[in-house]
Every structure is written in C-alpha cells, then in structure tokens.
Image (tube, rainbow, N blue to C red; front, side):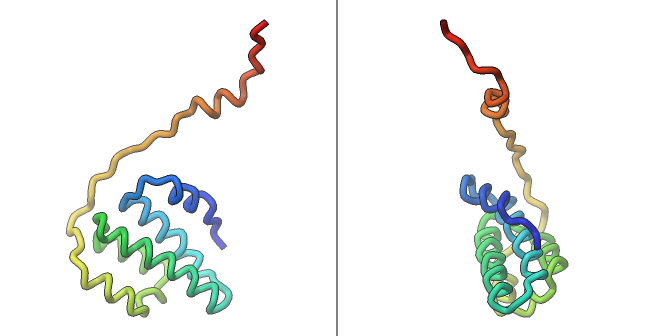
Length: 117
C-alpha cells in the first residue's frame, strides 16, 4: 500500500493547485488499486474523486484523467468519473510553477548550539 503521509501533509499545507490535486489523486488511486476490501477501496476512491473534482476546476487536462485511469481502471466505472468527463477540461498541458522549500530550518537543526556568553 502506498504511503500517503507526504501527500497528506502537502495537501494540508497548500497552496491548493491542480498539480497538488493530481498528486493526491495519483496517490489515492494507487491506494484504491491495492485496497483489500470494499470499505477501504471506497474511502480511497472518495479521496481520488474529491481531488479530481477540485483539480478539474483548477485546470486538470484529459491527459491527467487518463493517467489516473491507468493507475486504477476500476475508477472509470464509477458514476463520479463520468460526471468529471462532462466538465470542460483543458486541451493542452497547463504551466506550473516550481516551488522550492526553504532549507534554512533544516540546516539550523544540524548546527551546534549557539553560546552567547
């Protein structure tokens, strides 16, 4: 089962973007594909569809949806999938910004304590 910790943390911290929605959908689609019971599968697929619904509003493309379908074909049998296909989708790939984390907090934790005497 894929680990969802990183994507859940990114989702909690934001900002909410189509790329983040796609990452959430990819992760939970993989979880859904590996689910061992119906309750688990339903929970994971709900997360997929929530992320895709928001992502389509933010600019996901048909190619993005096709990628999710490749991860878990079973999702395409869900009525929520067909509802997504009825929404207007971008035809071309969206542009995305490159975000970089601030390394200073991590570096500071590795420095020796400061003695101000």
